[in-house]
Amino acid sequence: MGWSPDFSEKASSGKLSIGVIGLGYVGLPTAIGFHDAGFEVWGVDISQRTIDMILRGQNPTGDPDVNDIIPVPGSDRWNITSSIEEAVPKCDVILVTVPTPVTDDLKPDLSYVQKAGISVFENLVPKSRTIVVLESTVYPGVTANTWHPEIEALGLEIGVDVEIAYCPERFNPGDAAHGVRSVARVIGCSNPTIGESLVHLYSRLTSEDVRYVGKLEVAEAAKVIENVQRDINIALVNELARIFPELDVDVEDVLSAAATKWNFHRYTPGVGVGGHCIPVDPYYMIQRAADVGVPAELISAARTVNRTMPLHVAGIINDILYKAGVPLGSGKVLFLGWSYKAEVGDPRETPAEPLALALHNKSVHVTAWDPHLNTEDFPSTVECLQDINSAEGFDLVVLVTAHQDCLSIDWNQLVHKMRNPIVYDGRRVLDLEHLESLGWQAHAVGRPL
Image 1 (tube, rainbow, N blue to C red):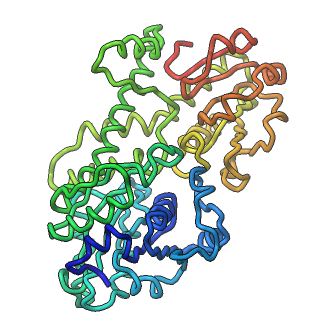
Image 2 (image 1 turned 180 degrees about the vertical axis):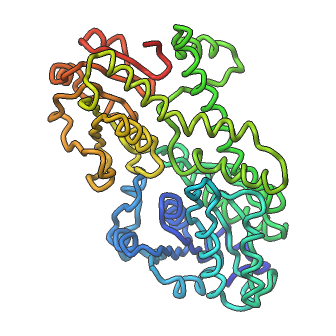
C-alpha cells in the first residue's frame, strides 16, 4: 500500500487503489474518472443518502453530465461506503475533495479539510507511505499548516507513514468539454519524487497536461488565483453595467465594440456571481493576504461589486415596477431559473437567493421556475412554480439562469398571460428586439431604462 519505488509503473498501468473522500460535485466525477481509467476505487461520503443513491446508480449531484456515467451497482473495482475506517487501509492514494466554504462573516472555513484529514490519518496503515492529496480549493499554506499538526499529534511521520500533496480540481460542472478527464492538472508536493509519481497517476486520469509545479504552496496559489482572476474580470463588466446605463449607453454595445480589438477579453454582466468557487475563493486569498499584512484591495473591491450585484438588480426591478404603476406591496415577479449555473441543478451559492431576498424586503412577491430543481430546493419565502405553462398574473419576468428550457419557453403565449408584460434579461442572452415585437417591454442588466 502507498508509495513504493514502482509506484509510477503501477500508476501508468492502473494497478493502484484510489480512495476519494467526499462524493459531491467534485468527488463523484473524480471517483468515476479513476474507475473508468482502470483503477480500484473506494468512494467515501458521510451522507447515507448520497451513498444509497450512488449504490443505486443514481446521481446525487446537480451536474447532468454525471447522470449516465455512474458505474452500475456491483461493478468491478467500484466500492462505495460511508465507512472511512473500511476504505482508507485499502488505498494507495487518498484524494480529499471536501467543501471549503466561507463562514457567515466571510472567513475561510477549513473545518471540513481538518476533519477529513484527521479521519484519514487515524486509519492509515503504519509505514505504508500512503499518499494523501487535497483537491479542495484553499489558500497557500493550508495543506501543510492544517494537516502537519494532526499528523504529528497522531505520532505519524511524513515520508514513513504518509505523504501529502496538493492537486486542485479544475473541471467545470455542466461543461462536458471540461470534465475530470479533459482538464490540465498541477501537482504541488514538498517531495519531488512523490510529485513526479503523481504526475504518472493523474496522466492516466486526464488527456491534458499534468505537471509537477514544486512545493504545495505553488499549486494552492495557482488554484485560488484562477478564480480570483475571473471574479475580477466579471466585476469589471458588472461595474460597467451600473455606470453606462446612467450615461444612456447599453453596456453590451460597448463590450461588443471593444471586443473587435484582438486582445480584448469579452465578459458579460449578470444578476450576480454564483457557485462554489468564484464567490468563495477570493475570500481565501483575502484572508491569506491579511495574515501576512498585505492589503488585497483589488480582490476585495471586485468581491464587493459582485456580491452586491443582486441588490443593484433588485433596485432596478423595483424602479421598473414603480414606473409600470404597480402598487407597493402587490408586485409579482417570476424568476426563470434558480440554480447558480445554466444546465446545472444546484441551488447552493446561487445569486437568485440574495436577489429574491432583496425583492422580498421591498414587498415584492417572488415565484421561481427551474426545471432542474425540486420544490424543496427553494427557500420558504419563494413560491415554486411546477409548470411554466401555468404562469399567469405576473408583473415582471426575470431571466436569472440561462437554462435552455428557460430561453425557449413560449414567450408569445406568456406575454398574453402577464398582468404587466415586462421582462428583465439578467444574463444578456435574450433577443430583446424579438421580445419587444411580441409585445414585451424589455429590460436587461446594463441596458438603459
